[in-house]
Length: 631
Image (cartoon, helix red, strand yellow):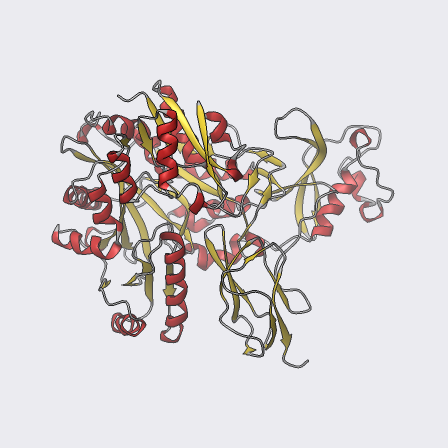
């Protein structure tokens, strides 16, 4: 076994690998960008090396800098985590060429499965069923459009080098294909350096079933059963669980056997995931599940597999990379209980799920459940990286108990002033369809109105906080007129400590306030301010102080389209003077690895465009102005 490991990643996955590595007695080495200088993964490691600026292309994606850091620190092995360089075959080869241990599959396996079109052809040869579609070399817009017409709408456009929902677009009508194709190609180029796409038939009631596989250097491949990742929003996983609801023994045997065949076809070593799409219109059936792709790395949702199998997958990765055999035989890997994971994103469900960035002045996670995170109170959610800030994982005897426990945990999340999807997660987990197991990848889209709440105005939030802030003379507010009558009802007294968890109504929404919740600085030593936690119903928690402005984003009343966050302009499909219809894209920006289209707020004319493609823009920058048609 090697004695030291460098993790070529950041955030929660770096922290996750470090926990197991340190438990095994290994020396740990972190790398970081300038934006992550004070991040938890940096302090957690025995040693840390600065790679470069915040942009991933100049830090975490620069393989030469990572190898230089390994050489400078005497690292013997490199673990890539997921994302960044984890599925970069050239980097894997460079690691091996440098005499280091690569904690991942062979470069040839990465290449074989890295491009979705080539992988599908390989799977057909291996006898693994695949989704009908087009994986041809001709990438002209005319050919792709013709193939989509042949397949029949709806179709799914997918970046061949994609993953995590990036470069993926559903198209329902032929007239929408060109715009969707251009967007998918841009995102594929931006995220993976490859604009090529493939086209698949879109299954109307799809379930996303994936199988965890593991191979070693002795030719053994095993599976660790399946996960269900059907609860998605715009192809991005939100809640995952293991095992899959409604999976009978016959179907499980068919899908896990196909996964093992797929892994063996590429001589796989280490942790990997075979992803399948299932037509759930008649429940899960062995003859209605098709191969989609393979992720040649550890998955974000690996904790639910760890929970039901009792296996530390990172420990297996380290041992297999050191040449040891897989610790368990296939018949020794069982399913125990039910596990669920919720991804906590820094985003605002009440404002179109726009990513939310800024300082985490208050960050409190629930106790009694597994929380994998790479941020902390006082840290920063940056525009440069993925908006996932934590994963909450529960393990119970039954699915019903797991859903209830995870909903309770999400309801205890407290984050401010960055917005999160905690309340949205609670409503997903408590929705009757989810509780009954009646889910598919279209669940969130179909039920979104019931899963989101109307935005509460900033003035109302601030008013609620000010009215209840009085402890230690931190806030002196002269007028409580808006709250006359409410104070007595909730037990508010000027000469006594308020009781916690009192209920009022803010903008007509039932609201719980927790008084004098102290906020500390990054080091946890000096009190910055006292605050009031304003918690809407279940999980929509904000901690609000009078010195904070929590503003909404979007088109202003004057027709100006403002950037919701810092980012880069990637497309301007119109020009000044063009007529536009309400909802038509005017400017497209990219931030936090996602594209966001700013659309015309009404029918009118583009008065001006403030930036060009490629320009970096700041938050609230006026990108364009649209004049109403009757002006």
